[in-house]
Length: 198
Image (cartoon, rainbow, N blue to C red; front, side):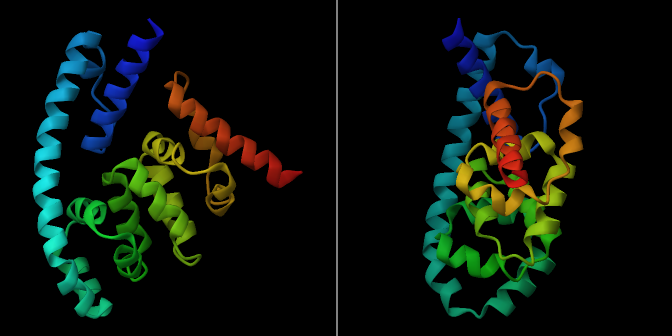
C-alpha cells in the first residue's frame, strides 16, 4: 500500500510539474491505476517533445555563445514567453543559462522557474545573484506555494540559507494535507529557519 501511495504521489507531482499548476480535483480523485496510466501517457509525449527541443537547442548553443547577452536579453524580454524560456532553460548548458538569467527581471525568472522541471529550477534558484534573489523567491512563493516546495525538495539543506530569509512562511499555513515530499521540503525550510535563529 505504501508503495502504491508513493507511486500515486509521484504521478500527481509529475503532472503538476508538467502543467505548472495545481491539478484539478477531478484528476486527483482518479483511481490510482488510472492516474498512473495518465502520467505514463503524458510523460511519453513530453519526453518526445523535449528530445526534439534538446536537439534543436544543442544545435543553437554555439550561436548563442557568439551573441552578446544584452541582445539575447532584449529578444527574450520582447519575444519569448516565460513558459517557452523555461523549456529552453532545461535544455541549455548551465554555464550559458546563468549568464542569460542574470540580465532578466525577477518576475520573468520566477515565471520561468515555475514552468521548469523542479530539479533544474532548484539549480537555477541557488545560483541566482543576490540582487535577483529576494524578488524572485517572493514571487515564486506567492504565485505557486506548492510548486515552490517541490523546488525546495531538490535543494540541499546547506544551500537553503540563501533563499529562506526571503520566504513568507505564513503562506504555508493554508495547506493541511501535504504530500510526503512537500512535507519533507517544508520541514527542511523550518529546520534551516531554526538554525539561523540559534
